[in-house]
Length: 498
Image (tube, rainbow, N blue to C red; front, side, top):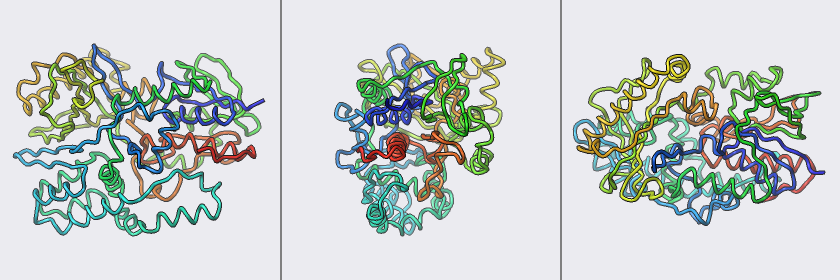
C-alpha cells in the first residue's frame, strides 16, 4: 500500500508537492484554509474585473530557460499560457518632472541611466555589466545537495564559479549603500524604487538579469490561470484537495508526525506530514514546542526580515488606458498617511491593459500597493467594523486623487474599487503578520539552504516561502519537487523524477 502524505496548505508549494508525490506513487491529500487553491498566488473578481494579487513577473517564462521552465511545463502551465515581455519594467517619476524608465533590456537601461545622470557613469557601467554578466548564468534544477553525487556537485560548482566574483561583489552591498554613491539626488532615490522592497543588491541584479534574458515575463491570465493549470493537472492525476479545512495541530507520537487535527476537531492520520503553510503557525502553534529550534526562534524574533504587510487598492477603469505605462512609481508631493505608524512617500500603480482577461473589452484593471501596519488594520477589523470600512474608503479616495493628479480625468472613469488590507491577507492565508510573501531576500541564503526538517522529529517536512528567503513562485514550486525527491530517497526509490 502506498504511503499517505498529508499536505498543509494548497498554495503553489503544496500543489507542487501534491503533484510530484502523486506522480511518484504516493497518496497525497492537501488541506487548504481558504475556499480556493493558490494561497498568496491569487486574484479576485469584482463586477467583471479581475484584480491580480500576486504575479508581476515569472522567472522561467522563456522557452530557452534550462531550469524553471521545465518545472512549469511539468506542472501544467505551458503550453497554454501566453507570455508578455515588457519593454519597460516600470517607470519612476519624480516630483519635478524627472523620470526613469527601467527598461528590461540592459543596454537600453544603461543609456537611460546615463541620460538621467551622465556624471554617475562610474557607478552605472559596473552595475549594468553585473546585470549582463549574471544574465548568462544558467540556473538548473538540481536534487537536494544531500542527494547529489560528487560528480553532480562538481558540475554544479563549475557552473557557478564563473559568476562567483559577481556574487561576492554585490552580496556585500545593500541597495541603499550603492544608491548613496550617485551624485544625482533623483537617481539615488529612483534606484531604491526599482524593485521597491528589500535591500539586497544581488536580488536586484538577478531580477534585472532575468528581464534582460526575457526570462521573467508576465503570464496572461495571472495568478488564477497559473494556479488553475497546476490544480487541474494535480486533480487529473487523482490528487485530493480539501478546502475550508484549517489545520490546527500536527499529531506527533514517539517523535514522529502521524497526522493532523482540523479546526472542526476532525483527526486525519497519515504516514508523512508536509507543512506548506505559514511558518509561524506551523512552528509556534501546530507543533509541540520541543521541536522549535533556537535558530527558527531567532528568525521570527528579528533575525530575518519578512516582506511587509500591504494594502492593495484595486480599481476597475472604464477606459482602455492604452497610453499609460504598465507600471509607474510616483513620488508624492505630500506623504500619504496609511495608518498611525505608516506613511507612503511614493505610490506604485500597475495597469493591466496588456492582459485582456483582467477586464471587459475596452476597460482596464489597475492596482496600487503600499506598506501598512498589520496590528492596526487587524485590530480595527476585529473591533471596529465601521471605522475599518471608513479607513479603507479614506485610503481609496486618497489613491484615486493621486492617480487623477497624474492622469487628469481618470477618476470619472472608475467603475469599481476594492481595498484589501493586511487583515484581508491574514483572513484568507493566515500568513504571519499579514505579510505579502515570506522572508525578504537575505544574502546568507544565496549559497546556504535553510533547514526544512526539525531535529528529533521524523516524517515531517516544511516547504514554501518561510523556508526559502526571497520568496517567489519558482522556489515554492521547486520545493514540491525537492521534498518529493527526499521522500523517495528515504524510501530507497529513484528520486530522479524530472
